[in-house]
Image (cartoon, rainbow, N blue to C red; front, top):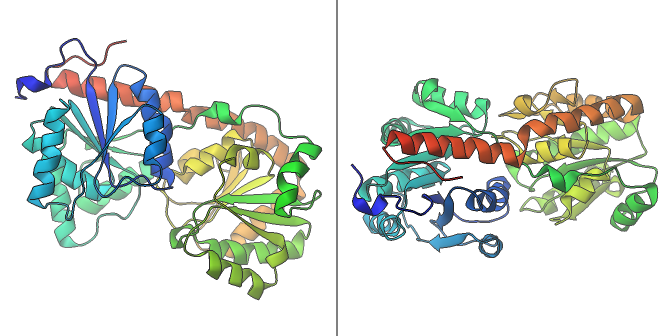
Length: 390
């Protein structure tokens, strides 16, 4: 039984999210959107980071979330575990909700040391548990948690198959997107030219946009090969790459080798992604793996048909043939063909655009908040504690 320090009294239950660091990425941006919304409702929400604060920590603090840093030098090093357990006690944490395998391991042990009533692990990607030792370890820690959630059915299946866990012990809560950021009609030709012209996009070009960090898992090299083929079919087009990362120089060199440098724009990291997407014609994702892509949902919300690899939760987000098209991983020819089909058929793009907006409504931020609060309520009740108050 939990100690008296965890009794709810008259205040809201306290949820401590645990993660490594707040850099630029899908998990991090989901936290920037979701945690303030949760914190404004029935639960008080904080965040603890186990490596360093990261560049987005200040932004989250500015949105009203208390951020703690407890540096770890090893996932199970006693000094870090006892420091983290101490934080849980001092802040009277009722729910520990940890993200990604390494943070989940540390948070689970520390939460049990602190006798936190509810411990949750959140899985965001596939193929994170490999090797006999890690599989055995993960089976143990899964039993020590009160709940495990995955961001998609694809992640759930992958995790349960990897460690031999009953799928009934894992719930799915999809990432949520603030759909209001994508409201409104597409920009006028003049507005589009004002936004994309400075990037070097010709007014008459079909704009194909990929929003992703320039890292190996996103397979931009395959996308560039596909785009080179596509240009032979549709020469009036621009590929807009939004995001930065360590592969930027290599990818720029690839565009020169392929002879497509004039048609590929490296836009870098942008803070106006909703505007960029709404000014585009097609969204494309060539990832080797995904858990549940925020960018796919954002593209749908912006009314863009999406061409994406059939990995992780992409098939759950994209209704094949209705609001987007799925392709096998690493298949540049398939990506090129699907892009060509959409670029050449304005009527198809228009039908898919309307279907995309309808599809995005299933993955709203409000729905993610509702599902998360419902999970919290049930887990607290199972521990004899009342859930958050309305």
